Amino acid sequence: MTQPGDRLRAFACRVCGRETLERVIDPLIADLQFEHTNAVRAGRIWHARRLLLGGYFVFWKALGMQVAAASGHAVRAWLSSDGHALGRTLAFSLALIATLTALLALMPMYAVRPWRAPDVSSMTLFVYVIPQAIPLAVIFGLPIGILCGLRGRHVKRPRRGIGDERRSRDRARDVRRSRVDPSRNQPGVSAFGNRAGVPSQRRQRADAVGAALALGRLGYAGCSCKVLLRPLGHLVRADRARSVCGQSLGDQTADLDLRSHKRSCFGDVRGFRLARLARTAGESFVRVIASMGAAQVVARLGNCLAPKPPFCSDGLHPLRLLEQCCAAPS
Amino acid sequence: MLSPKETLILALLVDRDDMYGLELVSASRRRLKRGTIYVTLARMEDKGYVTSRLEDPPAGAGGLPRRLYRPTALGRRVFETWTQVARRLMPELAR
View 1 (tube, each protein chain N blue to C red):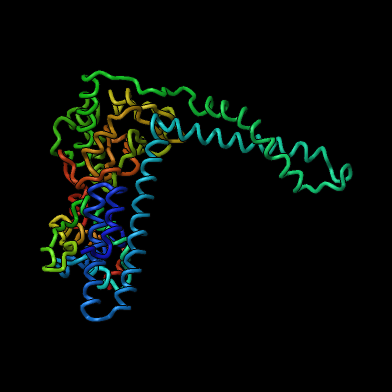
View 2 (cartoon, each protein chain N blue to C red):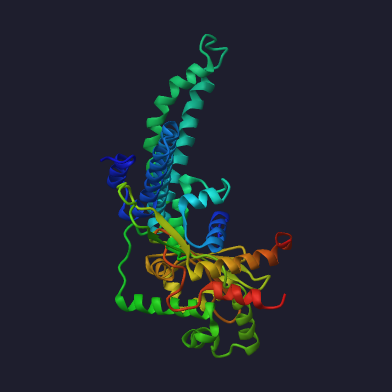
Protein backbone atom coordinates (compact mmCIF):
# COMPACT_ATOMS: atom_id res chain seq x y z
CA MET A 1 0.00 0.00 0.00
CA THR A 2 1.26 3.45 -0.91
CA GLN A 3 1.93 5.70 2.06
CA PRO A 4 1.54 9.47 1.88
CA GLY A 5 4.82 11.02 0.86
CA ASP A 6 6.14 7.97 -0.98
CA ARG A 7 6.07 9.76 -4.33
CA LEU A 8 7.80 12.77 -2.85
CA ARG A 9 10.47 10.48 -1.50
CA ALA A 10 10.89 8.82 -4.87
CA PHE A 11 11.36 12.25 -6.42
CA ALA A 12 13.84 13.25 -3.72
CA CYS A 13 15.80 10.03 -4.39
CA ARG A 14 16.50 11.35 -7.89
CA VAL A 15 17.65 14.83 -6.93
CA CYS A 16 19.26 14.42 -3.49
CA GLY A 17 22.33 12.62 -2.28
CA ARG A 18 22.08 9.63 0.03
CA GLU A 19 23.10 11.64 3.07
CA THR A 20 20.52 14.36 2.50
CA LEU A 21 17.91 11.74 1.88
CA GLU A 22 18.63 9.89 5.08
CA ARG A 23 19.03 12.85 7.35
CA VAL A 24 16.64 15.49 6.00
CA ILE A 25 14.06 14.02 3.65
CA ASP A 26 13.35 10.68 5.35
CA PRO A 27 12.71 12.17 8.81
CA LEU A 28 10.37 14.74 7.24
CA ILE A 29 8.38 12.07 5.44
CA ALA A 30 8.40 9.81 8.48
CA ASP A 31 6.89 12.66 10.51
CA LEU A 32 4.32 13.27 7.80
CA GLN A 33 3.32 9.60 7.71
CA PHE A 34 3.26 9.34 11.50
CA GLU A 35 1.02 12.36 11.96
CA HIS A 36 -1.24 11.40 9.07
CA THR A 37 -1.69 7.82 10.31
CA ASN A 38 -2.53 9.03 13.82
CA ALA A 39 -5.09 11.51 12.50
CA VAL A 40 -6.73 8.89 10.26
CA ARG A 41 -6.89 6.38 13.13
CA ALA A 42 -8.55 9.03 15.29
CA GLY A 43 -11.11 9.58 12.53
CA ARG A 44 -10.06 13.18 11.90
CA ILE A 45 -10.07 13.08 8.13
CA TRP A 46 -9.94 16.82 7.50
CA HIS A 47 -7.15 17.25 10.00
CA ALA A 48 -5.25 14.45 8.24
CA ARG A 49 -5.65 16.23 4.92
CA ARG A 50 -4.47 19.49 6.41
CA LEU A 51 -1.43 17.71 7.84
CA LEU A 52 -0.75 16.21 4.45
CA LEU A 53 -0.80 19.61 2.76
CA GLY A 54 1.41 21.08 5.47
CA GLY A 55 3.81 18.15 5.12
CA TYR A 56 4.07 18.66 1.37
CA PHE A 57 4.81 22.34 1.87
CA VAL A 58 7.50 21.53 4.45
CA PHE A 59 9.03 18.96 2.11
CA TRP A 60 9.37 21.44 -0.76
CA LYS A 61 10.70 24.07 1.58
CA ALA A 62 13.39 21.73 2.91
CA LEU A 63 14.26 20.57 -0.60
CA GLY A 64 14.52 24.17 -1.79
CA MET A 65 16.83 25.02 1.10
CA GLN A 66 19.04 22.05 0.31
CA VAL A 67 19.21 22.92 -3.38
CA ALA A 68 19.94 26.57 -2.59
CA ALA A 69 22.69 25.63 -0.13
CA ALA A 70 24.28 23.15 -2.55
CA SER A 71 24.10 25.63 -5.45
CA GLY A 72 25.57 28.38 -3.31
CA HIS A 73 28.52 26.20 -2.33
CA ALA A 74 29.10 25.12 -5.92
CA VAL A 75 28.97 28.68 -7.30
CA ARG A 76 31.23 29.98 -4.52
CA ALA A 77 33.75 27.21 -5.11
CA TRP A 78 33.65 27.88 -8.84
CA LEU A 79 34.12 31.62 -8.42
CA SER A 80 36.87 31.30 -5.84
CA SER A 81 38.90 28.77 -7.80
CA ASP A 82 42.28 29.89 -9.12
CA GLY A 83 42.60 32.71 -6.64
CA HIS A 84 39.16 34.18 -7.38
CA ALA A 85 40.22 34.71 -10.98
CA LEU A 86 36.85 33.67 -12.39
CA GLY A 87 34.85 35.76 -9.96
CA ARG A 88 37.01 38.79 -10.59
CA THR A 89 36.79 38.32 -14.35
CA LEU A 90 33.03 38.05 -14.17
CA ALA A 91 32.76 41.13 -11.98
CA PHE A 92 35.06 43.21 -14.20
CA SER A 93 33.26 42.11 -17.36
CA LEU A 94 29.79 42.85 -15.99
CA ALA A 95 30.87 46.23 -14.64
CA LEU A 96 32.46 47.20 -17.94
CA ILE A 97 29.51 45.99 -19.99
CA ALA A 98 27.09 47.95 -17.81
CA THR A 99 29.21 51.10 -18.01
CA LEU A 100 29.67 50.87 -21.77
CA THR A 101 25.99 50.17 -22.31
CA ALA A 102 25.07 53.24 -20.30
CA LEU A 103 27.59 55.38 -22.19
CA LEU A 104 26.50 54.12 -25.60
CA ALA A 105 22.85 54.66 -24.73
CA LEU A 106 23.32 58.11 -23.28
CA MET A 107 25.28 59.51 -26.22
CA PRO A 108 22.44 59.32 -28.80
CA MET A 109 19.97 60.44 -26.17
CA TYR A 110 22.07 63.52 -25.57
CA ALA A 111 22.38 64.12 -29.32
CA VAL A 112 18.65 63.82 -29.93
CA ARG A 113 17.40 66.41 -27.52
CA PRO A 114 13.71 67.25 -27.13
CA TRP A 115 14.08 70.53 -29.04
CA ARG A 116 15.49 68.68 -32.00
CA ALA A 117 12.95 65.85 -32.04
CA PRO A 118 10.06 66.89 -29.81
CA ASP A 119 7.88 63.96 -30.82
CA VAL A 120 10.39 61.36 -29.48
CA SER A 121 10.26 60.78 -25.73
CA SER A 122 13.42 59.97 -23.77
CA MET A 123 12.04 56.63 -22.60
CA THR A 124 11.17 55.51 -26.11
CA LEU A 125 14.62 56.46 -27.30
CA PHE A 126 16.23 54.67 -24.36
CA VAL A 127 14.32 51.44 -25.02
CA TYR A 128 15.18 51.75 -28.72
CA VAL A 129 18.89 52.35 -28.15
CA ILE A 130 19.60 49.80 -25.39
CA PRO A 131 19.36 46.64 -27.56
CA GLN A 132 21.81 48.20 -29.99
CA ALA A 133 24.21 49.28 -27.27
CA ILE A 134 24.42 45.93 -25.49
CA PRO A 135 26.15 43.93 -28.27
CA LEU A 136 28.74 46.65 -28.73
CA ALA A 137 29.32 46.85 -24.99
CA VAL A 138 29.76 43.07 -24.80
CA ILE A 139 32.27 43.08 -27.65
CA PHE A 140 34.46 45.65 -25.91
CA GLY A 141 33.67 44.94 -22.25
CA LEU A 142 34.18 41.20 -22.20
CA PRO A 143 37.79 41.08 -23.48
CA ILE A 144 38.83 44.03 -21.32
CA GLY A 145 37.15 42.41 -18.31
CA ILE A 146 38.98 39.15 -18.97
CA LEU A 147 42.29 40.97 -19.29
CA CYS A 148 41.71 42.92 -16.08
CA GLY A 149 40.36 39.91 -14.16
CA LEU A 150 43.11 37.47 -15.08
CA ARG A 151 46.00 39.86 -14.75
CA GLY A 152 49.12 38.06 -13.57
CA ARG A 153 47.20 34.91 -12.66
CA HIS A 154 47.88 31.34 -13.62
CA VAL A 155 44.62 29.99 -14.92
CA LYS A 156 45.98 26.49 -14.61
CA ARG A 157 47.31 25.56 -11.21
CA PRO A 158 51.06 24.95 -11.29
CA ARG A 159 52.23 21.51 -10.27
CA ARG A 160 54.37 21.23 -7.20
CA GLY A 161 56.65 18.50 -6.00
CA ILE A 162 55.73 15.98 -3.33
CA GLY A 163 58.60 17.15 -1.14
CA ASP A 164 57.38 20.73 -1.32
CA GLU A 165 53.91 19.70 -0.35
CA ARG A 166 55.06 17.62 2.58
CA ARG A 167 57.30 20.40 3.86
CA SER A 168 54.50 22.91 3.58
CA ARG A 169 52.06 20.55 5.32
CA ASP A 170 54.48 19.92 8.16
CA ARG A 171 55.13 23.60 8.59
CA ALA A 172 51.44 24.47 8.63
CA ARG A 173 50.78 21.68 11.13
CA ASP A 174 53.53 23.01 13.37
CA VAL A 175 52.12 26.51 13.12
CA ARG A 176 48.69 25.24 14.02
CA ARG A 177 49.97 23.20 16.91
CA SER A 178 52.10 25.99 18.26
CA ARG A 179 49.08 28.22 18.10
CA VAL A 180 46.58 25.87 19.68
CA ASP A 181 48.80 24.50 22.38
CA PRO A 182 52.32 25.95 22.33
CA SER A 183 53.54 23.80 25.22
CA ARG A 184 52.79 20.53 23.42
CA ASN A 185 54.36 21.42 20.16
CA GLN A 186 58.10 21.04 20.31
CA PRO A 187 58.65 21.25 16.54
CA GLY A 188 56.60 24.43 16.42
CA VAL A 189 58.40 25.92 19.39
CA SER A 190 61.80 25.08 17.96
CA ALA A 191 60.79 26.34 14.53
CA PHE A 192 59.17 29.57 15.60
CA GLY A 193 59.68 30.30 19.27
CA ASN A 194 63.30 29.49 19.93
CA ARG A 195 64.92 31.29 17.09
CA ALA A 196 68.34 32.62 17.73
CA GLY A 197 68.33 36.21 18.78
CA VAL A 198 64.72 36.31 19.85
CA PRO A 199 64.48 37.77 23.33
CA SER A 200 62.71 35.58 25.85
CA GLN A 201 60.40 38.45 26.77
CA ARG A 202 59.07 38.48 23.25
CA ARG A 203 58.61 34.72 23.28
CA GLN A 204 56.57 34.99 26.46
CA ARG A 205 54.46 37.71 24.93
CA ALA A 206 53.86 35.58 21.88
CA ASP A 207 52.75 32.68 24.08
CA ALA A 208 50.44 34.90 26.10
CA VAL A 209 48.83 36.44 23.06
CA GLY A 210 48.64 33.03 21.42
CA ALA A 211 46.77 31.58 24.36
CA ALA A 212 44.33 34.45 24.36
CA LEU A 213 43.33 34.32 20.73
CA ALA A 214 42.93 30.67 19.91
CA LEU A 215 39.18 30.81 19.51
CA GLY A 216 36.97 31.02 16.50
CA ARG A 217 36.09 29.27 13.33
CA LEU A 218 38.03 27.94 10.43
CA GLY A 219 36.36 26.98 7.21
CA TYR A 220 37.44 26.53 3.68
CA ALA A 221 36.10 27.35 0.27
CA GLY A 222 36.85 24.82 -2.37
CA CYS A 223 40.45 25.03 -3.33
CA SER A 224 41.57 28.40 -2.12
CA CYS A 225 41.74 30.36 1.05
CA LYS A 226 42.60 33.78 2.38
CA VAL A 227 45.30 34.39 4.90
CA LEU A 228 45.49 37.59 6.84
CA LEU A 229 48.80 38.51 8.37
CA ARG A 230 48.60 41.25 10.90
CA PRO A 231 51.51 42.45 13.01
CA LEU A 232 50.61 42.73 16.65
CA GLY A 233 52.50 45.92 17.36
CA HIS A 234 51.03 49.29 16.56
CA LEU A 235 52.61 51.83 14.28
CA VAL A 236 54.19 49.24 12.04
CA ARG A 237 54.63 50.34 8.47
CA ALA A 238 53.24 48.21 5.65
CA ASP A 239 56.64 47.21 4.24
CA ARG A 240 57.81 46.29 7.74
CA ALA A 241 54.64 44.26 8.29
CA ARG A 242 55.26 42.42 5.09
CA SER A 243 58.84 41.58 5.90
CA VAL A 244 57.96 40.46 9.43
CA CYS A 245 55.15 38.25 8.18
CA GLY A 246 57.44 36.83 5.53
CA GLN A 247 60.09 36.00 8.12
CA SER A 248 57.50 34.47 10.40
CA LEU A 249 56.13 32.16 7.82
CA GLY A 250 59.48 31.09 6.47
CA ASP A 251 59.07 28.56 3.71
CA GLN A 252 55.33 29.02 3.63
CA THR A 253 55.70 32.34 1.86
CA ALA A 254 56.24 30.25 -1.25
CA ASP A 255 52.53 29.50 -1.10
CA LEU A 256 51.49 33.02 -0.37
CA ASP A 257 51.06 36.03 -2.53
CA LEU A 258 51.62 38.74 0.03
CA ARG A 259 50.21 42.20 -0.43
CA SER A 260 50.64 45.08 1.92
CA HIS A 261 47.71 47.21 2.90
CA LYS A 262 47.93 49.83 5.63
CA ARG A 263 49.43 47.98 8.57
CA SER A 264 48.46 44.50 7.50
CA CYS A 265 49.52 41.99 4.93
CA PHE A 266 46.95 40.07 2.97
CA GLY A 267 47.81 36.86 1.25
CA ASP A 268 46.01 34.63 -1.18
CA VAL A 269 47.07 31.03 -0.90
CA ARG A 270 47.88 29.66 -4.28
CA GLY A 271 46.94 26.05 -4.59
CA PHE A 272 45.21 23.51 -2.50
CA ARG A 273 47.60 22.85 0.32
CA LEU A 274 46.21 24.93 3.13
CA ALA A 275 42.64 24.26 2.07
CA ARG A 276 43.37 20.55 2.28
CA LEU A 277 44.86 21.03 5.71
CA ALA A 278 41.82 22.94 6.80
CA ARG A 279 39.67 20.07 5.68
CA THR A 280 41.56 17.76 8.01
CA ALA A 281 41.30 20.27 10.81
CA GLY A 282 37.54 20.40 10.51
CA GLU A 283 35.38 23.37 11.25
CA SER A 284 37.25 25.52 13.67
CA PHE A 285 38.90 28.86 13.43
CA VAL A 286 42.59 28.94 14.07
CA ARG A 287 44.49 32.10 14.60
CA VAL A 288 48.15 31.44 14.45
CA ILE A 289 50.74 33.50 16.19
CA ALA A 290 53.67 32.56 14.08
CA SER A 291 56.81 33.79 15.80
CA MET A 292 58.61 36.38 17.84
CA GLY A 293 55.40 37.94 19.07
CA ALA A 294 55.43 40.06 15.95
CA ALA A 295 53.04 38.50 13.50
CA GLN A 296 49.56 37.15 13.81
CA VAL A 297 48.47 34.87 11.07
CA VAL A 298 44.79 34.42 10.74
CA ALA A 299 43.91 31.56 8.49
CA ARG A 300 40.36 32.04 7.44
CA LEU A 301 39.15 29.61 4.92
CA GLY A 302 35.68 30.44 3.70
CA ASN A 303 32.77 28.07 4.02
CA CYS A 304 32.73 24.42 4.83
CA LEU A 305 31.62 22.18 2.03
CA ALA A 306 31.95 18.95 3.97
CA PRO A 307 32.22 19.81 7.63
CA LYS A 308 33.69 17.22 9.92
CA PRO A 309 33.67 16.97 13.70
CA PRO A 310 35.39 20.11 14.92
CA PHE A 311 38.51 18.54 16.35
CA CYS A 312 41.95 19.06 15.00
CA SER A 313 43.50 15.68 14.43
CA ASP A 314 46.81 16.68 15.92
CA GLY A 315 46.06 19.58 18.21
CA LEU A 316 43.75 20.84 20.87
CA HIS A 317 40.31 22.08 20.04
CA PRO A 318 39.60 25.77 20.64
CA LEU A 319 36.81 24.61 22.92
CA ARG A 320 39.42 23.44 25.43
CA LEU A 321 40.92 26.90 25.42
CA LEU A 322 37.51 28.47 25.81
CA GLU A 323 36.91 26.26 28.83
CA GLN A 324 40.24 27.34 30.26
CA CYS A 325 39.29 30.96 29.71
CA CYS A 326 36.04 30.33 31.58
CA ALA A 327 37.84 28.62 34.43
CA ALA A 328 40.33 31.46 34.76
CA PRO A 329 39.38 34.23 37.20
CA SER A 330 38.12 37.32 35.44
CA MET B 1 30.37 28.99 17.77
CA LEU B 2 26.75 28.01 18.36
CA SER B 3 23.91 29.64 16.48
CA PRO B 4 20.73 30.50 18.40
CA LYS B 5 18.90 27.57 16.80
CA GLU B 6 21.69 25.16 17.68
CA THR B 7 21.74 26.47 21.24
CA LEU B 8 18.00 25.98 21.54
CA ILE B 9 18.15 22.46 20.13
CA LEU B 10 21.01 21.50 22.44
CA ALA B 11 19.18 23.00 25.41
CA LEU B 12 16.10 20.90 24.65
CA LEU B 13 18.09 17.75 24.01
CA VAL B 14 20.26 18.14 27.12
CA ASP B 15 17.09 18.63 29.11
CA ARG B 16 15.16 15.63 27.78
CA ASP B 17 17.74 13.41 26.07
CA ASP B 18 16.15 11.37 23.24
CA MET B 19 13.75 13.42 21.13
CA TYR B 20 12.17 13.31 17.69
CA GLY B 21 12.44 16.27 15.36
CA LEU B 22 8.72 16.89 15.66
CA GLU B 23 8.96 16.87 19.45
CA LEU B 24 11.73 19.44 19.27
CA VAL B 25 9.53 21.67 17.11
CA SER B 26 6.60 21.45 19.50
CA ALA B 27 8.80 21.84 22.60
CA SER B 28 10.42 24.96 21.19
CA ARG B 29 7.10 26.82 21.09
CA ARG B 30 7.33 27.67 17.39
CA ARG B 31 10.88 28.98 17.59
CA LEU B 32 12.00 26.01 15.49
CA LYS B 33 10.30 25.36 12.15
CA ARG B 34 9.49 21.98 10.69
CA GLY B 35 11.11 22.84 7.39
CA THR B 36 14.46 23.78 8.88
CA ILE B 37 14.82 21.58 11.95
CA TYR B 38 16.26 18.58 10.10
CA VAL B 39 18.68 20.73 8.11
CA THR B 40 19.96 22.19 11.38
CA LEU B 41 20.09 18.76 13.04
CA ALA B 42 22.05 17.34 10.09
CA ARG B 43 24.53 20.20 10.37
CA MET B 44 24.88 19.60 14.11
CA GLU B 45 25.43 15.92 13.45
CA ASP B 46 28.23 16.84 11.09
CA LYS B 47 29.80 18.93 13.80
CA GLY B 48 29.48 16.07 16.26
CA TYR B 49 27.08 17.82 18.65
CA VAL B 50 24.22 15.35 18.29
CA THR B 51 23.85 11.77 17.25
CA SER B 52 20.81 10.09 15.79
CA ARG B 53 19.38 6.63 15.38
CA LEU B 54 16.37 5.20 13.64
CA GLU B 55 13.60 3.91 15.86
CA ASP B 56 12.03 0.54 15.13
CA PRO B 57 9.70 0.66 12.11
CA PRO B 58 6.06 1.18 13.12
CA ALA B 59 4.34 -2.19 13.48
CA GLY B 60 1.79 -2.97 10.77
CA ALA B 61 1.67 0.58 9.40
CA GLY B 62 4.50 0.24 6.89
CA GLY B 63 5.68 3.84 7.17
CA LEU B 64 9.25 5.07 7.41
CA PRO B 65 10.94 4.77 10.81
CA ARG B 66 11.38 8.06 12.66
CA ARG B 67 14.75 9.37 13.75
CA LEU B 68 15.65 9.98 17.38
CA TYR B 69 18.23 12.57 18.35
CA ARG B 70 20.40 12.74 21.42
CA PRO B 71 23.26 15.06 22.41
CA THR B 72 26.80 13.72 22.37
CA ALA B 73 29.32 14.32 25.13
CA LEU B 74 30.90 16.99 22.95
CA GLY B 75 27.50 18.59 22.40
CA ARG B 76 26.86 18.73 26.14
CA ARG B 77 30.29 20.20 26.76
CA VAL B 78 29.89 22.79 24.05
CA PHE B 79 26.47 23.75 25.33
CA GLU B 80 27.63 24.08 28.93
CA THR B 81 30.69 26.07 27.93
CA TRP B 82 28.67 28.24 25.60
CA THR B 83 26.12 28.96 28.32
CA GLN B 84 28.90 29.86 30.76
CA VAL B 85 30.53 32.16 28.25
CA ALA B 86 27.22 33.82 27.45
CA ARG B 87 26.62 34.39 31.15
CA ARG B 88 30.07 35.84 31.63
CA LEU B 89 29.89 38.09 28.62
CA MET B 90 26.26 39.07 29.09
CA PRO B 91 25.47 38.90 32.83
CA GLU B 92 21.89 40.00 32.23
CA LEU B 93 21.24 36.60 30.64
CA ALA B 94 22.09 34.83 33.86
CA ARG B 95 19.42 36.69 35.82
